[in-house]
Length: 340
Figure 1 (tube, one colour):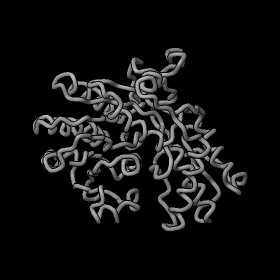
Figure 2 (figure 1 turned 120 degrees about the horizontal axis):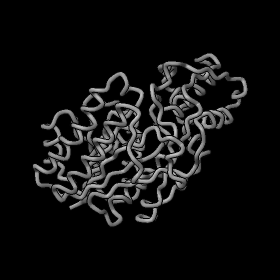
Figure 3 (figure 1 turned 30 degrees about the vertical axis):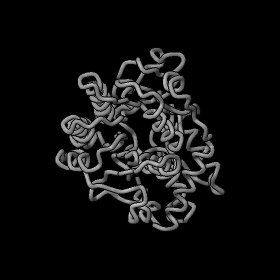
């Protein structure tokens, strides 16, 4: 029997790249869980394989409907679960806090409780977020970066929801002997990144300007926020190593890249790739500013690197170039996109 892996949220950026990685680097059977209304853009290139049942399939499930989770788990009985599904946009959580908390905390609880009730024994990755550390004063940030023991100081309802996700993973590992590891991935991006995230909306706006769809203005939020970037393709390789390299029940890891800069520097890098970049103006849009910003996101990843041997390989410049080209290609097909 083939090894089976379940990816919740396979239609998202990370889930789709994880499916690509597993199809290329393993012989596992991949099942992606999706809501019936989930956009399929990110797995468009996989639909023909899904239709042929060529090592990849989809099942309808929703974190807010436990009966659907029980149905999927009972049918698939996976050896591995990558729990990536979430309401993943921090900015959205300010206007939809209840949905964010319900989906991310109770949804994770429903999933893990379903695994327990069915007496399944998979190796589970629960994806939290670096946002759990929130707004750390510079004087309290460890000299080597944010490590796993840095106190949580959430700066959004999303961050609060991911603290709940993080703690639930560790609780189920300790209370029920389940093999669950939790990760706090720092900023990770690349092709298919949602346009509500800063670097992706920058790339989208530049592509729309290049196509003559928008005026030569990029709207921005806080450009002084500090970020450490990883490529999504390095991130999914890390997730694979997490579950296959001596998985330790209840372990939790910070994972992230090695390139750190201000958000404004990221915008400048993207503009440098555009032949008209010098003619584009930058304008602060108050609606893009968070009430509180997690503005010092620099990780210490030594614990995970020492355990798995992982290290990021794709340089920041390639990540940003690939992201911009993704939006250029997308806009050639779709034309105008929502201004956000």
